[in-house]
Image (cartoon, rainbow, N blue to C red):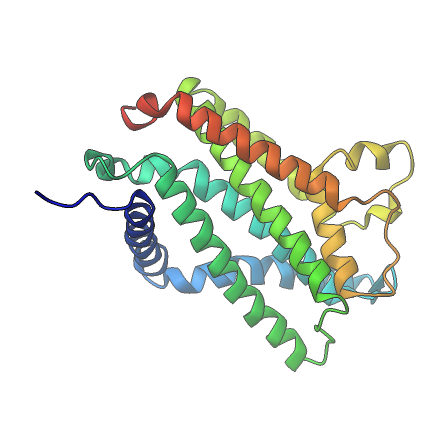
Amino acid sequence: MAEARNPLIVSFAVWKAIFLREALDRLFDMRAAWFWLLAEPALHIGFLVFVFTAISLRTVGNADMAVWIIVGMLAFFLFRRTAVQVTYAIDSNQPFFAYRQVKPFDPAIARAVLEAFLMSFISIIILAAAMLLGHETLPSDPLLVVQAVFGLWLFGVGYGLVASVLMVMIPEMEHVLKILMLPLYLISGVIMPLAAIPQPYLDLLLLNPIAHGIELARTGFFSYYHTAQGLSMEYLYAWGIISLFLGLMLYRRFALQLVMK
C-alpha cells in the first residue's frame, strides 16, 4: 500500500512545477519576451524623465527627480503586474486542473511569487543603470522600502484573487476592472507628488492604498523627502491582508466554478 504524501509537500511540488512553467512562458513565450519585461517600465521611466527634464525640473520634494520617478514607477508596476498576473492565473492554467493535486489557488500563488522575483530583478537592473549614470540609488532606509513594496505586492495578490472570482461570476466585470486599472496610474502619485495636491483632494487620494505604498517607498529612499502628511503603513497592510483573506474565502467558496469555467 502506497504511503500518503504530506499535503504540504504536495503543494510545494505543485507550486514549483507551475512556477517553472510560468517562468518559461513569461521569458520565452515569444521572441525577446524577456526584453519586453524590462523595456516596458524602462520606457515609461525614460519618457517621464525626458518630460520632467524638458520643463527643467531636477528635484521633487528635495529628491532626485530621476530616482523619484524610478522608485514610483517600479513600485506601481509591482502592484499592477502582480494584480494582472494573479487575475488571469486560472484562465492560463485550466488544463492543470485535470490533476486533483492542483487547486485554484496554486497557479495564483505561483504567478505572484514569479512576479515578485521578476520585478526584483528588473528593479536591480534599472537602479544599477541609474547609478552608473551618476544618480544616488541606494535607499536611506532599506527596511522601510521592503515593507512598502511587500505591502504593495500583498495588495496586488489580494486584488488579483478577488478580481479573478468576480470575472468568473460576472463576466462583464472584466471590462470594469480594466477601466478601473487605468486611472490608478494617475491617482496613485506615480507622476505627481502627493504633497502638491491641495485639500480636500489629498484626503480623497489617500483613500487609495497604492498611493501610501508608493510614497512610503520613496520616503525609504530619501531621508530628506518632503511628502504628504497622513501616510500609513498600517493602512496599506490592512488593505493587503483584508483583500487577501477575502480572495481566499471566495476561492474556497467558488472553487468548482473556477475550475469548470
